[in-house]
Length: 108
Image (cartoon, rainbow, N blue to C red; front, side):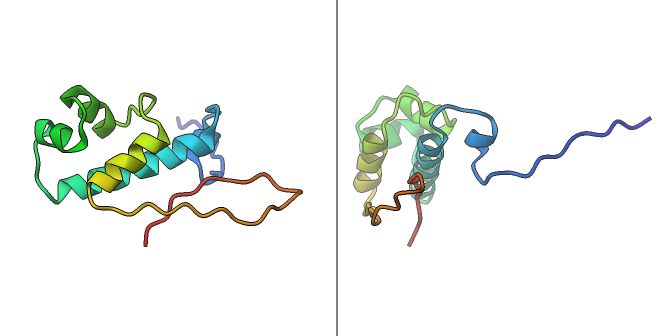
């Protein structure tokens, strides 16, 4: 006997789909963390070495690697990227009065 499982189209933001408060911020932080992890993976560093490079204790590196991002501001994630040699560019578009703005992380 098979049960039908309802399928819902994604909004493109898993945090919004799950009803998380401030889903745009969570998605941006997750994307920034992914960029940080990608930058350190190529260096083959231990968590302790990553912590020293970023100026944080090893448990914070572990939290970052495991997606526990509540303890990290976007500004702090920007600084981590800078320490890893990445430029962070912030672009603000002209206002669209009838729409809500959004936060998006893109790569060059």
